[in-house]
Image (cartoon, rainbow, N blue to C red; front, side, top):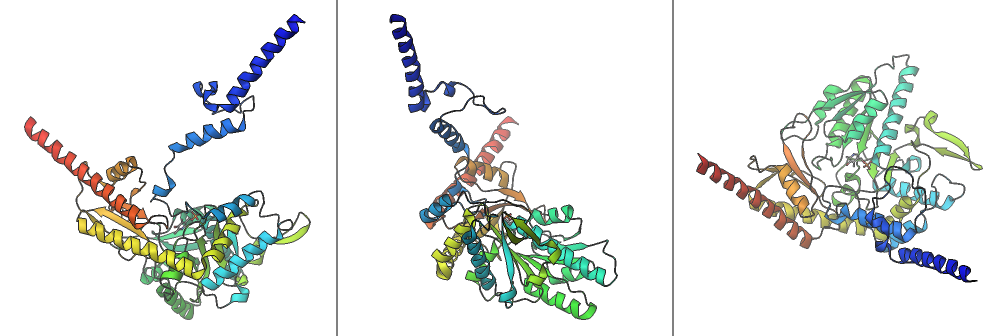
Length: 466
Ligand SMILES: *Cc1c(COP(=O)(O)O)cnc(C)c1O
């Protein structure tokens, strides 16, 4: 009897210890140990404790709301969050099981075809992707095949496909050329010219050009290639030489800005040679990361060989993508934004961001400390270079000092042949209101003054020494 009681006591004590640990994760001895980083732990751990561990560790990340580096959405409405959570367990590729989710994708594609002014509405087609990168790969691949098929039908060589674009393109374009074996004809930038001209395009294209890339809202300066003039040049070439060279427009950021800020500017399906367009839903489409869109003006712009008709989970379906399984939530979230905001909502948000960016530019110009190098930007993006540089005062040090105040503002040099231009880039998103901008400016000027003063101080010390 007695020994039994003893065992029970011991057991109860252990149970209590475990209970305490569960109820009070910070008292857990694991907080005195390092956590598993290289191997799958032998034992399981309580969920709340693991949550606390990872949650706390992630506070070392930057604050998304102070992240002025990225174009990607950091905030959505609570109702959108709710829909996202509710649908997180749906694999988008299971079309037969989740037909309604698929219909929402189709609606988004129709809405975008209209927004991008397709005159061939019935025939316009497209797909949701993980982002603009997948969309660009798929778009360019289709143009490569179209070119190849045409050349074969004319009994001409298909050995040397090339693609023409400017140094202002996103890295994914160069990746395409490398991965899919296409010669890259890159038009370099120069100081004070950060987009490409129709004349340059005219010089570069030939009968082996599968496609010309044009960017609406470049990553580096937020400016646009003049798609309309490039289209004109390609139409002339088509007339004169018979080369039918399509344009793929990279509207990753601009595709959700220009239709609302300057709908009269022609960069989209209104132009004859524009056969495909990509846009990032997770940039100014205002959805969290994981959603991009690819549109073809006409379904004939995708060679049928590239469409996979698969029999999957009991149904025939056609599919054009690089990956297979993916979440449904961001497609649903995109449709939420379309319904929720409508034209008016997107226009109001875009106008706010552009007006805030104008304000930021004015204040920075008044300070006389920086040059604004992207006055023609179509995006709410401000790119600055320093009027005076020195050992202690350069864009990299400003970026570093701003980071210590929480602001994330990248510093980089522009692509060749403008690599001598060192800049800071500020991307405004809808969450960055006027009040926050004022605090940002205060910190920016403070950081600048501190660096300048440390400069003077160091110079003084030197003069004392010698
Ligand atoms: C962001 C961006 C990309 C890449 O898009 P993801 O959606 O991040 O894959 C491509 N081109 C331009 C112009 C971009 O701004």
